[in-house]
Length: 430
Ligand SMILES: Nc1ncnc2c1ncn2[C@@H]1O[C@H](COP(=O)(O)OP(=O)(O)OP(=O)(O)O)[C@@H](O)[C@H]1O
Image 1 (cartoon, helix red, strand yellow):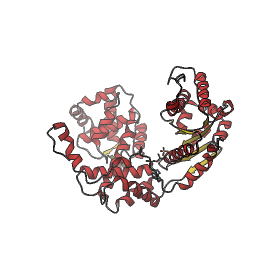
Image 2 (image 1 turned 45 degrees about the horizontal axis):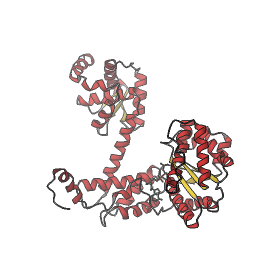
Image 3 (image 1 turned 120 degrees about the horizontal axis):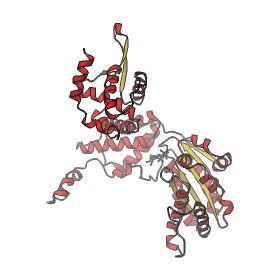
Image 4 (image 1 turned 60 degrees about the horizontal axis):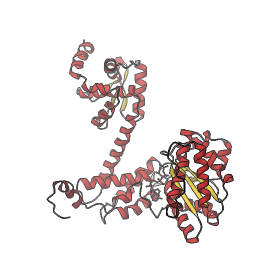
């Protein structure tokens, strides 16, 4: 790496020049599309066999694909889709794939407009300038639908529409989109449409009209979770492109695989563990990624997901957490539900929040324990009976930061704890 006089470049260059770990870390990212998908050949073959008739300009059956998160559903469908497009161009037929993520594109209007936009982009080279572009908002849905049909018939051939996270679309906007799309073939003259729905939450089927469900699930494919040896194969293949030779110790891939298999066989989790372990080793300038980095990566992922979970808690639960954080600030590492409840009752009026009953507070404390935000244990206090003790495991600085981001709790930033403490000392220990 060249020496530099420029302070801005100098700030970064030392981190680039010391790289002993990664060859190409992008290979471990979710957005990377692997060309080899170990342990998914049976599913890939099934999807290919269902889509093959499209190369003879026949309509393939619709497919519903489901399986837990990180089981390779999206990766497999994208792989078959791109192979189908290659085969179609070799054979001189017109087969196109449009892949939509319904977590983002979650209304009928957006789905139809996005399909039109994707086929428009593909046709760009051969486009006749008179073609009407559907705007992403503003038209009546009927008009979007009929323009989409025009565009499909102009292009001809077979279009496979992949609706990834289809459950999000159904839960947000009902089954109208699927009703229309599963019936679109009867309105088309020159072209054919087939749908692949992908989901990790089968409960969305309950929201579907039985006719929509039966046409959508003409074929169903289940993606089972990966076991630890299968995850080892997946990680080994990805690691070959991602890491420099000798940059990972022998036990690292089996450990990442075992940890991810314990959860629910999620390849995404396994890849995250491996990538974050590599990043930690890179940052502390180690020569090799070791089991220690994997353990640190696991703790980091757990903290990050816990922080995400705290951010979505109701305000009252966050106030209970804040009460515990206050006790911790006063030097206490373990607190009882009685203590938390008393601090809570003093703080709640400061931000005009209704005071919950002690019973309700203990319910919310149990919930926080179940979510893994705090640890609890029941201890016997002799003749005073039994009481619940609780403590934090994780980085409380981060928890405090997230809790105070709640607009209703923001005012607590300036709470004078010392003044409160004097009051508590007076009332509690009288
Ligand atoms: N067999 C495999 N070989 C290589 N990489 C894989 C394999 N299966 C999954 N992956 C990788 O794991 C990550 C998650 O896979 P993918 O997005 O396909 O899962 P999914 O089942 O669609 O999950 P979700 O339901 O959460 O969207 C991706 O980075 C993907 O490349």
